[in-house]
Picture 1 (cartoon, rainbow, N blue to C red):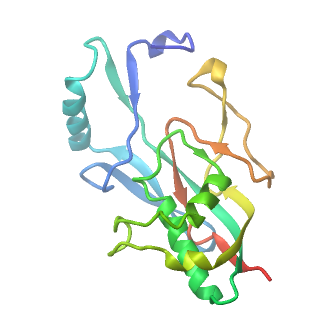
Picture 2 (cartoon, rainbow, N blue to C red; picture 1 turned 90 degrees about the vertical axis):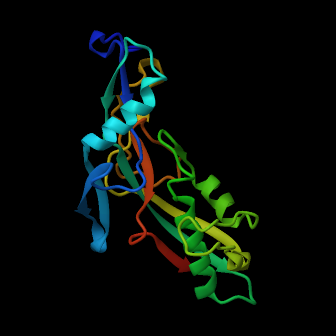
Picture 3 (tube, rainbow, N blue to C red; picture 1 turned 120 degrees about the horizontal axis):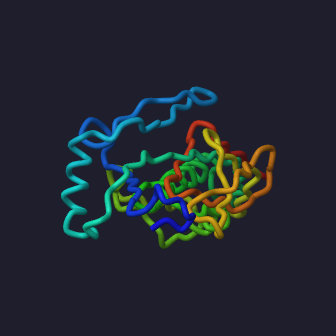
Length: 212
């Protein structure tokens, strides 16, 4: 379908995926340098083997007149500035490390999706929710993040997109986007990603500080 009215989009299905793992068997990547030595994954090529696997999977599920257009995923790296006020009986280092691990877990690709709304309030609730534990997807063993109990207050001072311009969606012209980048905007606002954009975490440039 072509909601925009563009006839070149008729009978075309755009496919974007997050592979596990990246590489010669799926989507090949390169690395882009960021601030303070951070490296970002930059997808650049669907391998023929991976496209064949996807085509075989989709063949029994598609309308005969539809054909596929493979789109590379765009990874959007978020950087946070987080202040932590701790409970009196905890050490700052132990609480900070638990919060950092849980932040990393939040951005586990198995928990995220394309076209997602990234809201710091959801992230704060996720970090402080003691019932949420990892199941060993990122860490060798399940992690209960027990020292998160030492958080007295969690303060988000800044949210920034490091490597890309994020656009606000235009609901009347889907799937096109209005070019309204968040440049110089320091508001703790909800950021909605595009249909080909997937959230990731810039762990190097995410900052933690102790509040008193």
